[in-house]
Length: 81
Image (tube, rainbow, N blue to C red; front, side, top):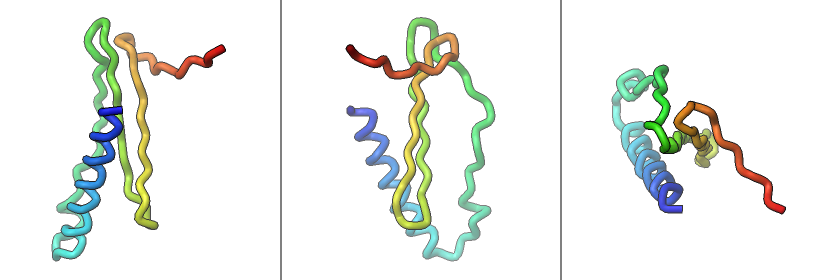
């Protein structure tokens, strides 16, 4: 839950920053950070949580998360019962 709360807080901070930069005269090219194209799996016997957020035109945000094991496989939630 803490990680989700931190991700939400960070996305709100980012949204505020984007709004302030949008009102300035900077071009969109100078604000672009690009995309990571290299991914490294977590250390042995650990898990890695990758998160990404994207602002939508309607002011909402899309948020995605994926949890990886040390072998690089994505972990899926287990069905109870």
